[in-house]
Length: 482
RNA sequence: GGCGGGUUGGCGGAGAGGUUACGCAGCGGAUUGCAAAUCCGUGAAGACCGGUUCGAUUCCGGUACCCGCCUCCA
Picture 1 (cartoon, protein in one colour):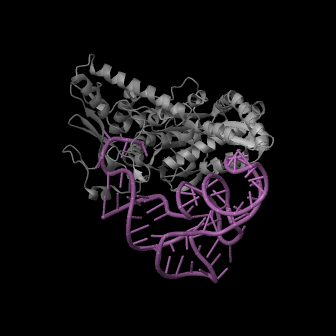
Picture 2 (picture 1 turned 90 degrees about the vertical axis):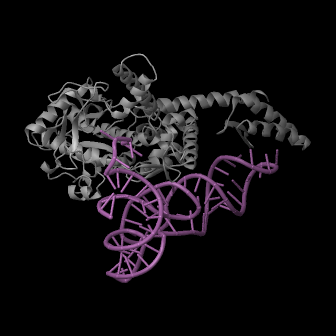
């Protein structure tokens, strides 16, 4: 069996994946807070961990991998958005508006991530498991966990809040490499009067009547930010599971707090084994931000005509552990590559054979080496350079989630249809050329050629004949006028 | 201020203590009515300063710059 090695943020080392339950892998990835469209930074972990999911399914078998990714649908930003709508006079209760907004956002998220070729989280061993749990469906489990933390002396209730006592957990800060004392020295912590220690964080907080809330032993309230992941991962994956992932920005405080809560509430005192974090994304060398005007969503790109496979290809060019720069130039590079792959598949891919074939071991090995997607793409390029390996290239693109075989075949067919539709122009051009060969007046040939080129058609004339292909800016409407 | 990541040829981007990364672009040639496509060939690097070493882009230390987290943004 392929040995998978992954970088564990916790140990700061490359570690061999040894599943808690041999032969079965369980992975939890922190999902989005659902209040708005996913921006291109949000999509990076989705692609990273989807790639890992695909690798795990390949190595362990589809029936032996469980992947859970939550939707956080209780959050003050969501509340604020719903309150604003209510104040604007929209009908319905706050709860209805929140539900409406979160449902809508989840729908967007699914559509956008589907376009990137990301598989929906799912469980092989338990196909009925809801692997995309919503936080609001796990309030009782959160309350139970908070009660356990209080009972074990790791949390305390104060003024309607329940707080985690960071001093009760000596390992607090281990994941992110900081000490409680150092952090307090940073002095940017909100020091609420009811906190025993400035670093103590909220597990439960009271809700006023105009905010969503649930009954609890501490009165009507709502959960703090981090507890939902601890509760949901425990409910669905158990106390101890194999991989926990997310963006590096979650390392502190989110994951640090998850570890504290889960380790202290769990009988075993343990939690996830391997912690994986993807580095951040920039845009044209700068931090993506609304004020710089370089902020955009996955949907923005899709609407601009950048296909999901191109976006995914750009993500996969950079190793997940390094900062990634989204640039227009990379987008173009990816577009050219994808177009070349489709053209090659048109010529040399045996789709029937491809559907029966396993991905090339070298590609699997590249991913097994701490998810070296760039190395995998280099192998794809090598395959593209040899006609007898193009079928393997197609299998590789499918395995990497860039272009599924069905999608690739559909693109090939679309390309063929376009080429066929160009046939009459090819015939016209051939006739003109033949005539020009005799008269030595190439004016008419060049006239038609440049018209075709301005419609985005690639004109290839050789001794053997004329070939017209759709180019990057191919426009069928311009063509009709010729 | 604390913690962490980054800096490789025009651009993107890896691995490896000493042997061509690779891709795109460029340049030269073949080919073409001209192009395109294709093929062949080719220049170009390792932020800066030290140290270890026979030898470092690769290891160690420092400096600079960029980015992230420490403010419930992946």
